[in-house]
Length: 545
Image 1: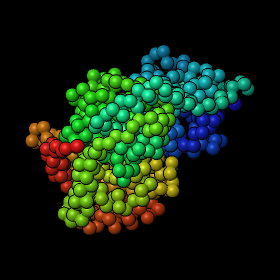
Image 2: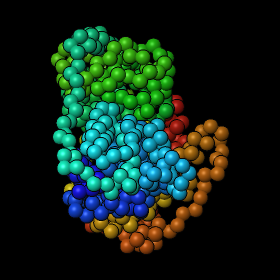
Image 3: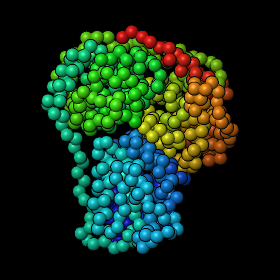
């Protein structure tokens, strides 16, 4: 047996089901070993697409998604997706082939120091230098990737090492999942006292609650203590929107939650909150509120985020115990925010104007989907609308990249979501710019018979940047472009293309597309004049508790 076969055995031992990637000369032995493996190799059309697939697969399953590339340009093409996974705390293991170790010390064809290149964007990056280290390296990579805070790891596999023989005693190591520590009793008692004494507490729930699968504990905690919950973009659905304490998503950098939520709070309870999701200077500019940090890890250092108390340990157990220890809050639940959001949602449900308003697109999409179906949202102006107005009743049903926030994630991410949950409908919600960044993966979906719907918000512009330019300067700069005919583009892959030519067509098109067993691309013109109206309305919003 050679080192590549041992390597694949180690991946099987970790429970890997899929590897997303592209074959190359320097991973020939690994590719050959995969032919005898139960692991399914998903051949993609670009390494960035492979990394995004691994990213979203890890985010949805909690098990590290795996992507593979060859050396040089193959490995560098992984970087954006790997960085996205690491900053968004999605478990991922990236693997790249490398030239023989005999030429790594000198200038050589396609050779880069990949270990050094990936170190700043991963939790752990290493190079395999001898076959007998493979079991330890693979075990460590998956353990580190899947341990809080979860993230990306990288393994460089030189081609001469990959073909070496291994000894009989070189076998995969036993897998022992890491357990999160229990919160300290003293911390819980102090936190309970602070919460009990608060007059206007509010909860900020982050992606860590999703990773901890602590949604039920959070919902119980908030309801029993009568404390309203605002969630970050990446924690949508962590408590159902129908929950009496649910306020919706924060992160639009506008005045509604700052003025009407956090600005009125005396105690802010941050649960599973990562600063990359929503910087604290935006919701805690005064730096004078009492902050309680509840998470599996200690807080990052920031002048606007200095917790008076940290409860470190298993989030589920922390919330369950605090719900029993603290005295329920007797104040109001900041309903102005929630009621305003519901009114916004309802206001445009029957709006007939064309191009379609963002609010109407979201209403129809939410109506067409079951509550456990999955939406993968790309980055752009549509992300801001989806984050604010797409109602979620379950976590991980609206995936939004908001740490690294990279464009191009939606199409490959939707493919990975369908592989992870084949029984659910999956929609990639994307702008026309983000769509074309990884639209080549439509071929991957068609080849593998993966049925997804791609809803393209078409404005022939980098809409989010134009929104910000208009807000800041009153004019736009170099954001316009031309698009291909998306219907013909879809058909060139063998997929189905639909062009929305009136607002009344959108709902039937969505329902029909979701029922099809193929890839469908829906080209939907969007009226982004609503962007500036939203900015103006949020900027003026003030409200009582």
